[in-house]
Image (cartoon, rainbow, N blue to C red; front, side):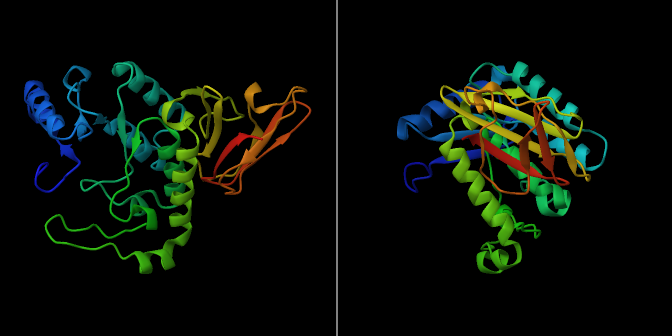
Length: 270
């Protein structure tokens, strides 16, 4: 397949069922054919078994998102899961991130109004975000795994153009800001850290601030804003990148964040 059909990579389901030595030999053979051949293990691999792969799956974050919409988890649980993830893998390990795949319910059907919030999270975390078969037009039909089913782009865009535009903008923002793929994540304090998942990411001179409301209630309250988003006089200087209804205003006490229910916003220094 790699030689004759120019396949440039594989996403391997349940890669944990084969021994590490097999995948190491497989990766070596494939990269001799094409040096940048991509191997993704879409399963929770122990780090010692991940040497052959360019990226590995991690279902734990997806599980936290499921529990959030069920009211069984919150932003503090998400932060803890991401922190534990960092300590579970060797530095430099690339994580595959998803909201849906062939084994899950469609993101729009499962997450509903939270779909937008989790989409922003997907593109603002490190790792590799993956889009599945019409996810960017909020497709709810589960495609066949054995029959060819072209994505109905025109019909889907008319029905869900807001999602399409959001995903397009998120991709643009991620390409523009290397901090989203490579930077460190710094959690920011708000008036309710269980509901507001706010963090900054920086990489050399690049920085981005993301705020996500993980609840069905709008938020209006304080938010910690790092100095990198302030000028020499200490005034907040932010430029909104999504324009999804969120806003940060300077106050005498510091900064005040406004976010609608399940609201999202991303800022860069202005």
